[in-house]
Image (cartoon, rainbow, N blue to C red; front, side):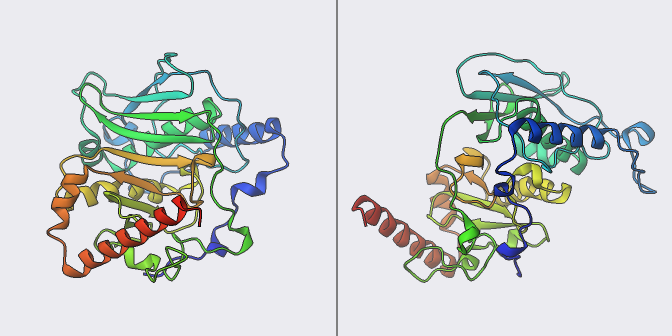
Length: 322
C-alpha cells in the first residue's frame, strides 16, 4: 500500500497562528453559511429524501455539561453539511460538570441501537450527516477545538458521545522540523530503538480501500487504530468518503475479529493529541483481545510480542529518565 507523505498533508493547524479569534470565527461561520445555502445540483440518478422516500437521517440530542468554550475555529475547517442532510438537530443542554459535553442520538421514538448496529443499519449519507452534525455542535456552535471525543455504548440510549474539554495539554510534536509522521510513512520506525516499521502494523484485510487504514496499536494495547491515508489534523477536515470509512472500518475490524462489543472509541483533537495525524482508537476488553489473538497467524503473534517488548522498554526508559 502506498501512503502519502507528510509533505502532501496540505494546510496544518499551525498555519492559522497569528489570526485573531474573532477573525477566524467570522471566516468559518461565513464558510458554513455559504455551504448551507449552496445551489449545487444533485448528480443524475442520486436519490434524495424529498424525491425518492429515503428515510430520515438520525438526529442527535446534545447535553451540554459545562459552559461553552471561547476557542476560535481556524479558517477553512470543513463544517459542510453533506448533500441530503435534512435539518438541524434538536438540542437539550444540561450543566452537570465543567468541561464535559454529551451528544445523544435522537431515535425519533424508535428503540435505541448500539453503535455497530447504527453503522450497519444506516446509509452512508446518514452516517456522514450524523458526524457532520457532531462537528457543527462542538466546533461551530460551542467553539471547542481542543477536546477528547469518547464514544461508548449505553444501555438506555444506544450510544453516546462525550466531549471532554477545558484542560491544557502539550499537544502533538511539531512535524515542521522534518520529523516523519508514522501514520503517513510505512518506512517510519515506530520507536527510536528497535526495528519495527509503521507499515508492519497495517492490517491489510481491513485497509483495502483508498481512504483509511487500520493498524495494530504500536504500544500493544488491546484494540485497533484507524487513520486516514491523507494527513489531516481534525475530523472536520475529512471529506465525506474519509468520514464514513473512518468509522465503518473500525466496526468492520471489530466484527471480523469476533468482538461483539467494545469499551470505547477515542478521537482526540488539538492539544489533547499526542500524534498530529488524526487517529481513531478503538479499545476492547483485554481478556477478549487476548482470546482473539490465539487465532492469529504465527507471524502476527510474533509481531505483537515485538511490540510488547518495545512498549515495555520505552516505559522503563521513561520511568528511569532516559
